[in-house]
Amino acid sequence: MKVAVIGCTHAGTAAINNMLNLYPHAEIDVFEKNDTVSFLSCGIALYVGGVVEDANGLFYASVKQFEEKGVRMHMKHEVTSCDVNQKQLEAKDLKTGVTTAYTYDKLIITTGSWPVTPPIPGSNLENVQLCKNFDHANEIIRRSETDDVQNVVVVGAGYIGVELVEAFEENGKNVTLIDSEERILNRYLDDTFTAPVQTTFEQRGINLALDQTVSKFDGKDRVEKVITDKGEYKADLVVMCIGFRPNTTLFKDQVAMLDNGAIIVDEYMQTNIKDVYAAGDCCAVNYNATKQPAYIPLATNAVRMGTLVAHNLVQPVLAHPGTQGTSGLKIYNHNIASTGLTESAATLAGLDVDSAYMEDTYRPEFMPDNAVIQLKLVYEVGSHRIVGAQVISDADFTQAINTISVGIANDMTIEQLALTDFFFQPHYNKPVNFLNQVAMEAMAKEAKKIPEQEAVTA
Image 1: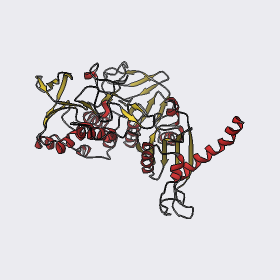
Image 2: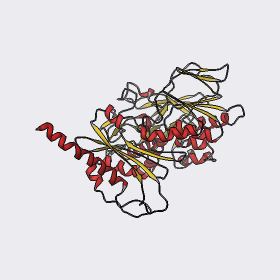
Image 3: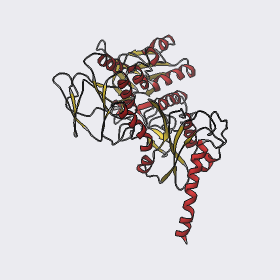
Image 4: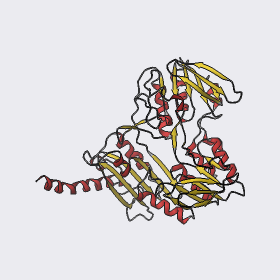
């Protein structure tokens, strides 16, 4: 069996590792535009901030390791064409310029994603940087460490953007964060959970230029300022973190896709074309909160999907359980995590939802040390099915969101969560665990609606 893998970050690496175990006699050809594999891009801000000093720690597999196991690694090779019906592709060696044709029996598309790059005038100026791969990370560090870079502008207030803001500020830079939304992390968290982070940013002297759109990068040869629809900001370095799009142009009109270009796969990671599979940031995944396919580019999703591709390559044996889009974030003293839908996202998805919120100390009052936990639960009104949750605290309660993620995957209701058996020990929690407590808040909220409903019926 000849297998071609296009792209080798999280999904591609997982697929290869599993194929080596499952099909030791398979011939595996891997095509990768970069000269490295398995880069943990979620560690870029830690690398920029100096928390991670050895960049080798951001890789968990190597080209040499794969080659020693018999994998044919075509590094610095760009696949220029691929005919999924004829089962053949052409790849260009970026070092020599030579293009070679290859055939395969099975194709695994793990081409990942690429930063969204709006056609903003001045984007080609020196020191306007993207933030995605290892080369980007090295360039950002190289340019930011020069003495003439004091004013850094980050465009995009998602996870990577806010992490970079923290890293630059702690490195002594004057930082401006620009985003078109009215608050940071708008896609992931509700206002109650973003407000504390914004307050910390402001206390740290970070300039929040929110609810405005970049119209131009200005400068002679190198960027000097960023112009928005509401102001101008000095900039010696600009880092673009607007978001990501599926890197699937090569397969347009060949395999089924969502409108944004994300490849549609079934629960066994197969596309609508036989023997063509896809995994990772290049494709959609079933979102358990909405019961619909969605584009959720996360390393965790990519690893699971890459693993599943390998298991289902010969025959469908292991179905994808869906995702909750669970993620976590640490910014200064704030430990944050979320899973599923926010209240606003649920409404946009057409779900009738309500929410419960609790803010309390997590230990009994007699304990000498304590911390406040803020926790929100989003649930469907009719079924009481849990569809989302968020948490923030100076203490680390992020693992609680993993628990709720499991609940969403299994259609858990607020009543079931309220009565779930969690241990009690004063060092860790109260007799009524905070997860039980927020679910009970939701139950109480629903109970208050019953008389109103009965009155309407009468």
